[in-house]
Image 1 (tube, rainbow, N blue to C red):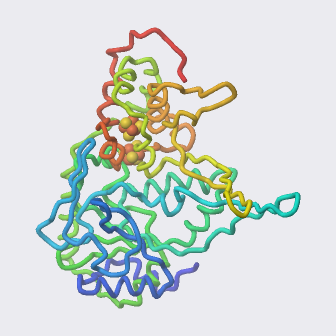
Image 2 (cartoon, protein in one colour):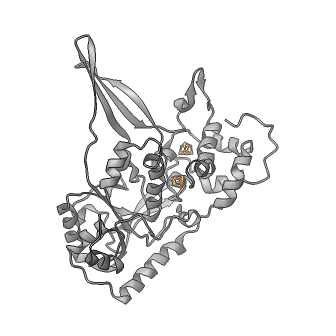
Image 3 (cartoon, rainbow, N blue to C red):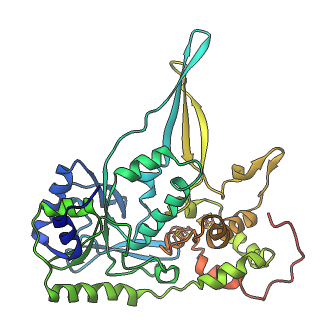
Length: 385
Ligand code: SF4
Ligand code: SF4
């Protein structure tokens, strides 16, 4: 879409959205035909789901995170975005956990097969963090920029509006600064908000964003509000303590396939696949034909899969990676090293979800340090699989 001169003028400056006007902002999104997906509390966690009213948001709640630990806590203000990230990521909307692809019906002696049409839905993702913008970019490389683009992903991605929210706090599990993916939103959004106690500094990142926000006729942000937003954003940077030496890990981990520490991790890892389910970049799926007991119907479904599943590497004769040790090693080396060879970028954006949601608190930042060390390299060579 070509921007008009007025829209470009709007895009060049930041605007001020008063907190009292937030509902009007939601209304504008709805009137634009978007289904708004944002943060809400469900089952004791901040997850992403449909939001229409301010009351749907986790008003005044924050999250406390550590390896294997997630808790909601009350804040002493009414922030709507005063948390880090929860177990959900936006991939569950762009690349749903389960998708019907094809239906077959028994007709006489044969079968009628028809593809399930790609559902047209316009999402407005509200509350996308900087690391999640990077994760979407990583998945774009897999689903859009490959030889065989995924039409389901393509449609959802094309029609979605992305409203990012800059982090003003970080969890103890965050390490986006190490992965160069946050906490400041730099690109890939239509609108980006920084939340302050009395309102939002709004930055415009696209013509779609400019067109929508124009309907609210917002004032330009005052210098003092810009400064307050900068202080709030800096607070998130200062809170990040966790570090991953990205370049060292990328160059070293592949040479440590026989490190004794893989056994140590394997002794703790449950092979439960939680880390891959919560990871915003993991993209593996399998396809299964599900037979209905009535109506002689078969549905072909695509479902998220995981390299931690025993059958994931099944070839003729059995699975190639039949031990937890080799499955964890496959996951970590792919995430942090071979992903770069494959897609030109790391498969990790430093969101910390796999650390928080691992039931036994396995922490890739800590395991990588040990695995990249010289100590423990005396194990005899075995298959790198
Ligand atoms: S590997 Fe862990 S920290 Fe990295 S993007 Fe995936 S869930 Fe986040
Ligand atoms: S590393 Fe943790 S979350 Fe991942 S499979 Fe092992 S036990 Fe499950």
